[in-house]
Image 1 (cartoon, rainbow, N blue to C red):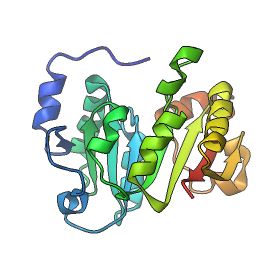
Image 2 (cartoon, rainbow, N blue to C red; image 1 turned 45 degrees about the horizontal axis):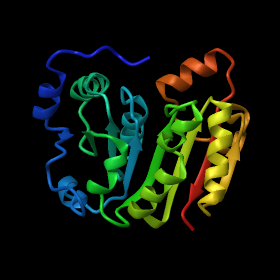
Image 3 (cartoon, helix red, strand yellow; image 1 turned 180 degrees about the vertical axis):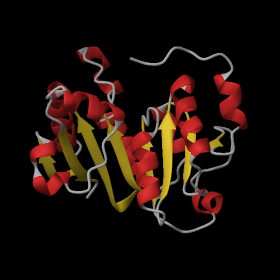
Image 4 (cartoon, one colour; image 1 turned 135 degrees about the horizontal axis):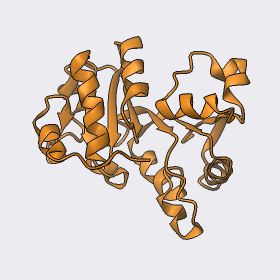
Length: 213
């Protein structure tokens, strides 16, 4: 469930130094924005930001960009970041379908999709972040050796996603239907807020790692 709209959240986000404005010229300029040539990892649908901020603390030699559509949710992430600042992270409030407006070809090293909206109705399949339509967008910004990591507790969405990976002719490198009991794939796993909640209920977590080539 999404947080209710918080009055003034968009204004707060627009003025925050960690949040990139959609109108800023970022395409092809991310290394200049961060002031280094470190790898760029992005999370689409970052929620309150626990996952990506944990990664940023653990990996200071990687630049992280969290993307979130909902202002009220992104605001929570910004509040956490202001309490414990990090130099290697930025946030963007935007719709995922506009991602190619913010990143240049071969600019991104890794994309994380965590517990994305399953859009359960068939007519909404193309809105799923693992649909072939979105995979075509990711192809435009991922480096040739870049990878996509996807986690969910939704069996139907996971099955759909595996089929889309196949249809899009991406390479599936690894997958599991019970991440927390898979010693190899669970090594170094960073949990999201949703992952903690779902796994505490006994729900198995599904994950795959794929790439363009």
